[in-house]
Length: 256
Image (cartoon, rainbow, N blue to C red; front, side):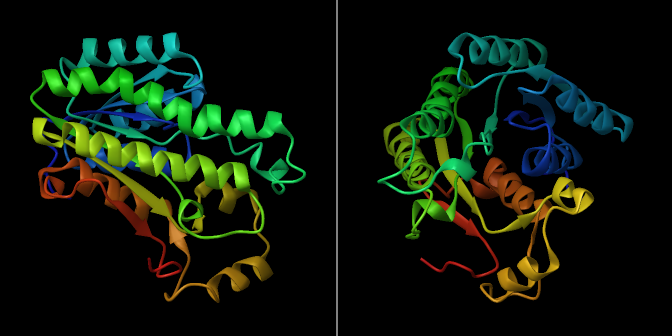
């Protein structure tokens, strides 16, 4: 693995499992010092401990992106230990409510409000906490995890789609407002990704996997490492002229 992130100090918010955990490992493998932030403190610590055991540099902090004070404390801890902040990957989501997100006529407004609170307001809170440190450092990169739901029509999940469309707009706002001050802001939109947790738990029926494969122009479904690779690019110097973009990493399932 290259050392293109050597000396970079990065926080990954929502890093205890799945894409976030894979991103932490990828960033550390490329030489970054990484703060592993998650609402599940034990999961975050396990990821950080695994990186350290492999010779990397990582540590864990707790964070709840629905709580501005929690986010502020996490960022202060991260900067206090890292000494600076070069980038952030904001990856947190509450996927428990997504299965209650029906349609515009029937969706419970509590489901809508919770989805917006985490997926949009939470990401704005993180942005407000991270940006001053990036600007003080002379610039840096923010990468958000969005979804193709923000661009593609669906008969269900209106709350989720609205939150991701809003997140894409937030990303473009940050890119246009602070781009000339050295800030890059981009989104990564994963396709259907088989996380290690899904594989280990046998949660996805073989028939469903075959069905999903018919919707991609690829030989396989996604892996968390596919998304982590794109995030690493956007956080590196190789990605410094990519700004204000939604990067779809989906095996060709959506070609906007």
